[in-house]
Image (cartoon, rainbow, N blue to C red; front, side):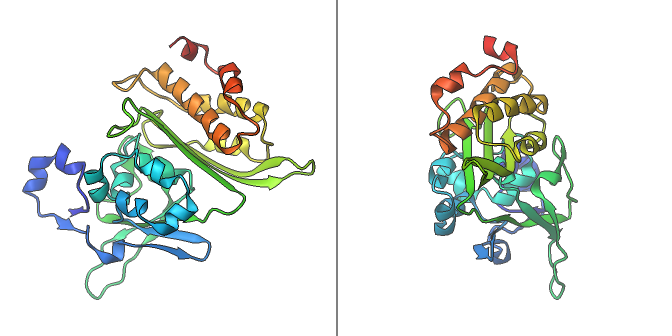
Length: 288
C-alpha cells in the first residue's frame, strides 16, 4: 500500500499498518508543490495542511485562509496530514474536503509511476469521487496526485464556516463552504452567475450541494433568494443523530452557517437581526 501522512490510518489500524509493507510518498517531490498555471491553481496531493497555511500564493487568494486552517486539527497533524489523505479518507466532516468541494475542484487520479513509465492520470471532479459512505470512484492502485481549481477573481466571493464543540483541536459538527461568481444586473445590483456550495456532517459523504448551487444561479443577492435557497438545501441533506448532535440540530446548524456565508460576504444586505427573524424550513429544528 501507498501512504503519505498516515494521521488517521495509524490511529485506526496501528497494528496492521505497523506490519504492512508500506511505500511512503510523503516526501515524493512529484506530489508536492503549489503553483499557478494560467487561471488555475494546482496543488500536489502530498501537500500538508501546513503547506497550505504557509503558502503565500494561497494566502493572497484567500485572505481568511489562516483563520480557517487554524481550525483544522492541531499543529502536529497539520504538519503531517496531506490534502490527498483528507480527500480519500472520505470523512463526511473533512474540513479540507468541504473547502475544496466549494472551489469546484478537479482531482488527478492515477497509478504510481514506475521507472521508465509515464503516469497515466485521469481527471474527475472532486465531488464525483464520493459514491457512498467510504465508497470512492478510485481503485486501490490509484493515488490522488493533485487537485486544481480556478483562481478567484474580483467577481469571486468565497467563505468557509465550521462549528465544533471546541474552537480548536476538534472535528466539526457541521462545516460548510461557498463560492459565488458575481455579475452586475441591469438594475445595478449583484446577480449570482455561478455558485458552488458544500457541507459536512449532513450526509454520509462530504456533500456538494448540487441542487442548492443550481438554485442560486441567476438570482439576485436578496433575502428572498437566501431564504428560498434554504428550503432547497434542507431537502438535499440527510443528517443523522450522533455524538456531535441530533439530526435536527445539524439541520439548524447548516441553516445558520448558510446565513453566515451571506452575512460575511454581503454585510450591507444581511444582518444578524434578519438571520434570527428568518423563517425556518424545518419547524422541528427550532425546538432543539
